Image (cartoon, rainbow, N blue to C red; front, side):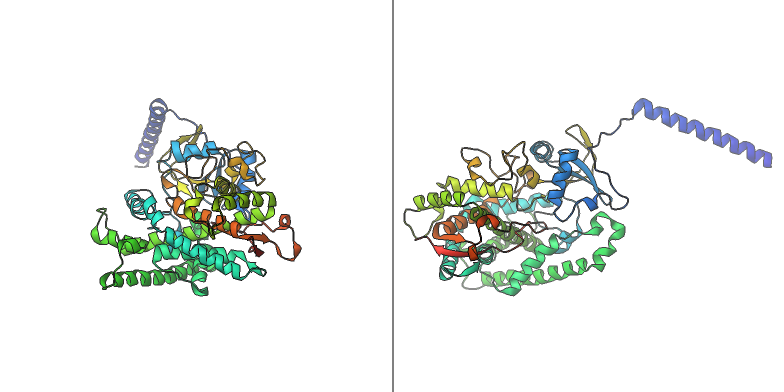
Length: 501
């Protein structure tokens, strides 16, 4: 019996070896092995990968690493492979040539919690749902006609802000507070129908943006997800989501009640919530628009619009204070075009070429979201000679591209003149300047936000001379940055405003 079992085992072993040999020969003959050509990578550590190399300012750290490893660099944040693109050429390949392959978003726990399972436009994965919600935003909310229809709201809020600053002339003021109040009031009125002010509302928005920008260990190192619970991040995200949902539920219910009432709004007076409710009621798109989707879209437009618009304005005025020559040149332009009017209106903005150049230069030097919202590959891609597998996260370092010395002469110098007689724009067609991304996942609300930027900057520099208090020179203004999804000026802009006329 033992002899029989031994013979049988030997026969099985030989048969198994022949099978392995056959499969190996078949693999060689019909599937020749090709060595994957992966992008250069900095050395990583066990478990955490390259997380330790991100530092307190990830976009700056990644820019430094790219100078050593190249414009396409493969990193590992925990167990997740992350491709970092730091050149205009690499960005063009990702967001234009292979845009469809990189059009999705990775699943991330904090946006999921804050935005109803990522049902918004920014964080939802690529697919039919995303196409529908983006189409609703572009066709019904953010088209040129709709943006222009809110002109009176922008100009009214601008006049109120100018009046508030005039009342404080000769005093030291926190200009950042005035700017965030202006952008908040405009976007609240446009999106929600009226302004919502006060410490409670501002605190809610601040908490939302702060939590959204916090690094979540669970997304990159699942075995360390307990850190997110222990640190309180998960609880903070849940509480912010609950508080914002309660607020937005109240807004939506208020709009529904008004639509049922005898004093229903005319088409001209509709805000974005009204428009979304009409789309839902009339089923204009053939897409079932759920209540959570309405709230997610509004929250997306509201939070992104307020935060990026305000921070761009704050950086622009800070740079103008540091560069008196540029300030005088801009003031000369706006004064000449205003021709003695009390306020600059939106019709004047098209003639202000130096104003537009100043804003472009600000976006180049101070990209509001320096690392664009992560993308994720949905198929294997050959990118600039490298093999990029499915499931790779992609970060576009828009800040590094904006300061690339091969693209920009003296890239760290604030010089708006570089954009005069220059066709480069920020709308996603020129990959040297990408503050709002490009391709399918480019920001659909560029026009919505930038007209506020232009109107506010033109009127502030037209009406006031701005100086730092206590005789501090402009060149000594603190320009250090915060960390987070949006990069703000770390310290508020404290100035003394005096009337120019």
